[in-house]
Image (cartoon, rainbow, N blue to C red; front, side, top):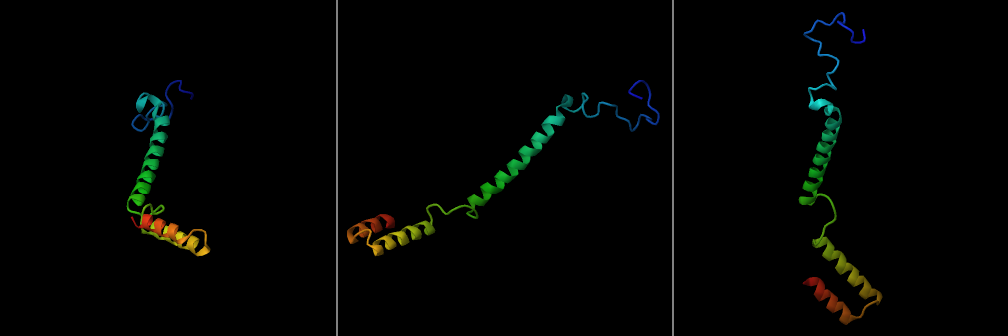
Length: 100
């Protein structure tokens, strides 16, 4: 039975031989190693593409250089002025810088 002749019940049209996975047909046996690697690369590529598109259209991630950042900076500046941490000249200078 251990590949020493003909195996009973194997009629030839459905039997592909003992080397179906490791034989010389699919990349010389490297398909068992490269197949999962390619599948992982495809999944990573799809996830990276989705993340890129979400960031491109602003659906994910912090707003950089947007209106929300300016509002937060102005709020912090007003709070520091109200607490007395900065004087009125420094407040007006920093306010001008934020408006630019």
